[in-house]
Amino acid sequence: MGSRKHNSAEIRKEARKTQYIARLRNVPTSPRKMRLVADMIRGIDVELALGMLQHSPKEASGRVYKLLRSAIANWEVKNEGERIEDNQLFVKEIMVDSGRMLKRIQPAPQGRAHRIRKRSNHVTLTLGNRLVKEAVEEVNETAKSE
Image (tube, rainbow, N blue to C red; front, side):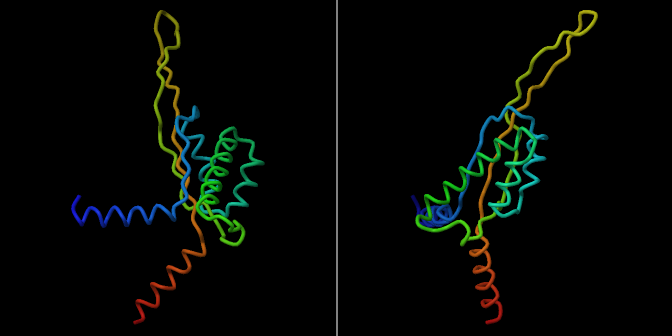
């Protein structure tokens, strides 16, 4: 491996240590319904998002709730001994992508058939830390002023 590739791999490896990601694959819900729930919690603090998901009547909110709990557990593994409340965790990014589509046939009148598409989706949730974001902004501002 060349030195350029090695250096960029090391940079990516260091960046991954500060990312807290959880993924949910092949959820048997249409992406459109899942995006309604995802839009509800995007950019919100973790504690508030957990409460919103717990009391939401939508079926997809239960799955996103468990996904958010998994992302919090991933954060706790990388930051042992720290509290969530002190670090101001928030839902930095949540993406809902289309998954595989099962194609079925529905009998129709006069010997015809209608195609039914049973959709699924993939959800990727990333947590962010507001304190780290503020520290980076302060460093950038001091670098610009000098």
